[in-house]
Image (tube, rainbow, N blue to C red):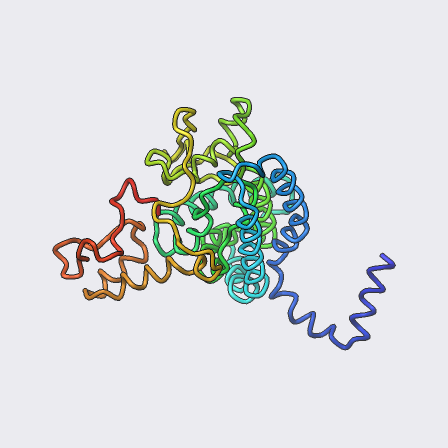
Length: 328
């Protein structure tokens, strides 16, 4: 307590304490980033340990890509830190102000927050694969052709602007505190870091049935036709079993990682934005406003019908692989 008082005195004597009181509410969601900052040294240590195990296998580990993955993650954390309080927190505060219920903060509420965040993550993640606007931000996470702990850090700096945080708003409207929603979300991402690996085989059956495991998540990252757009769960795999998107890992069909149209660049800006460029290029083609806007919410493989005069001529260099084989 003495140290906290000393730190408080530093702020008071600096003359910046009123500014901090103004900024603090805008940064209230950033307890997520605090968790990530604390966890990052652990992520680095675990990745280095994994590197020692698989460094001689270029199919599983590329040191340059691993560094690039952490750089992608740093960009994500920076934009979240700068803009989450400005863009997302006011909307959460509004929903929470008009909440339908006012539950006490206890273990029951904590359990409901965990379950609520996990099921919202499932639908957010599913939309991030099946709605092209959200896929444009998520694709960078899947574009690596390797599966290791550093792959978990491949995140998009545009996430906060993309709007996938909207999927959790119903929880605040129901009365769950947005700060604890953020804590549960951060905890989910920390958990998911540890399932991005090929070093862990199948776990005991009861764990495989209930939780998202490295085996289940390897399927999720596979571009094999039978694995595409499966296993969306965050911590629990239960939602995939419930909503029909679960697929078990087949020992006779090891996952082939990556996306069906690899990105021919290692530039961070290209990795973050290439699908947005493709999306807006498709939208710019002639046609009705409604058909153009369809590219935003339709699946990534969707193209306008051939009867529309917007239909693309085969061989123009931007056609997509047919549905059921196109990854995103």
